[in-house]
Length: 330
Image 1: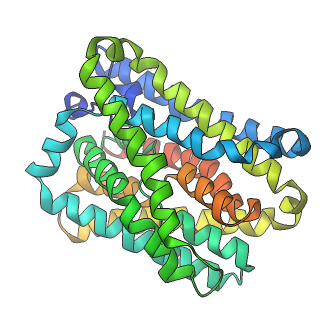
Image 2 (image 1 turned 90 degrees about the vertical axis):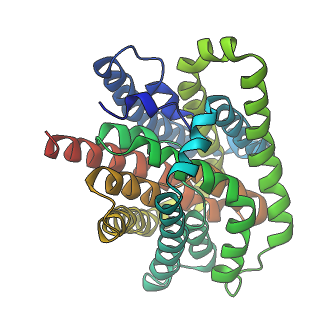
């Protein structure tokens, strides 16, 4: 694949692409990652539902678990991720605007359309205000999309999250529940930017060691996301049965329209098919781990439920859409 040489992993899951010797090997590794990951998260959610009293007390650990994921992301970043931004600022800027306009707007619209109760409404909006998801690069690769553009948008949207996410949540959800935007900024800096920076530093000081560890990073990140979902589901197990149907509907609509509108925005800007595929996944796939962490910290386990469901669904839908687009491009 033409973009394989650029796929130097700006997210933990995307690191599965890097060590491969050829496209076929990379394709197999990436498919394994996006197949196993949602199954692992689904199993974690089932365990949390079955044994809520055992895992619900783990709520204070969620921000630290998110820090592990972000540290892995920093380990997989290289200078090429930032060089790609400088080479195509227009396309990256369009991706960022599309991501931080389409998904928050959809979250707000779907929450009101479905008449969600306040805690769930804020949870859906919070998912929409999160940066790009950690599997977006891999599914872009599987879809034969523009991996370099995908990595650039994912990287910059994550770096901008401390400034953008809290105030978008305040703007769109502040009339529903009290939103502490200032403390949220500090928490995102501590749980996102500091671990990413630490990962970048470790990669710079011990590049050889990190390179040998890259194949394990997707599975470490996937397992950590699974633990976050386990804790979130355990905390909301008492209300999950009543809310599961409407939450799943909200998540499916949110993710589906996000993928479609992301692709449409790329086509409308005449970015080309490969870049439009990247736009679809960068808009439609969210960092649900961050959304779950913020929801559990500032609201309630029920508010974190949409993020937990989104974590499973967007990886399943992303893999299916990527496979369909891959066949269309042959």
